Image (spheres, rainbow, N blue to C red):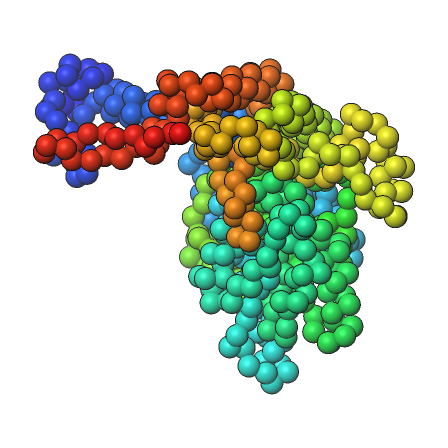
Length: 501
């Protein structure tokens, strides 16, 4: 039988064609199965060159070794793996600490599969508390709504749709820096609002929404109406970045109205993919209806996740990073990421071909008390993140107006296509609703995106742009591959390319 063969390729195994979408009648050797999948997956893009993603793509080998050693542990089996449970509890305590949880609060949280699950839990906790308060007041609970900007990541919209909460999107535009304006958001709030979700790091441009200003607006709203509206911070990317790049910036549990925060360990927490965190400032904010008591795994256990079984390995990887890097290490990485992102931003704008929409290369312009704090913290140092606008190390850019006038035949999406041919994954996409007429290319500068890689990327972007400016036939042909149409001509399929100019 094929299973007993030591051959690597199917032709050496003597195997027949293997069905793609049904179970083979007979198996093959482990070597052959490995080689077949290995060869197929080579066709994927390189994670290291996937500059579209916020997800971390590198970890020290000691961390990978720990993950491998613990890959079969199921965190749901708390009685069987008590040491792993304690590791999770330590992670929650450490994260809550650098999110400035007040000393008189008892923070509670859990690991999740990612920020999407964490957002669902944060939203559900707000909905349950709202329902309980409305019921006690003798009011109906039929029309809950939640507020967030139209720049929100899809996970926030999923929460609203999956759990029957009206989604009220606050429009964004250039005047709001393409993120939610707290002053606009207040206009969408009423007595049925379960909460406001504020995003610490827009996926479009990396800009931080203003948590403190949103809290101030809600304070004024409550004083006027008597309605208390809490804040959940979606810090999927910013939760492991802002505390280290901008340590004096108030956005977390030091803002009184913030009751819960989520983040992704697998983004700037620097673990492999598959880890999120949700933490409530105090156990009173985790509604009792979300907590399940279990008795069938050998002891009494408590669960408040959307799924049950989950791998322990990513949590152990998180603890490894917290120990290995410490505050100094995370701070150093954040500063290097921002420096590399600024270098890319400046090179793009200096070319004249591009306008950078993201802000982390722009000088910090806040006035008043905030500016005084920034100055005292070292804003005058141009190598410091405090000298610049706050945000994630994201570079969002578009063709400059001058370039578009001089080269109207060039489509911005062609840059994405041509870079992909060279291995680079740099997405081109429209900004949120109300600003969708503007398209941007975006690069996420992660730890693995070195200064040398940024230099190479700059060269590739400049070369690619120059090729299109010259109306290079080969460049335009490759750039329009994604626009190709397959048509039937004389009973045969042919690929027909759209004309570029």
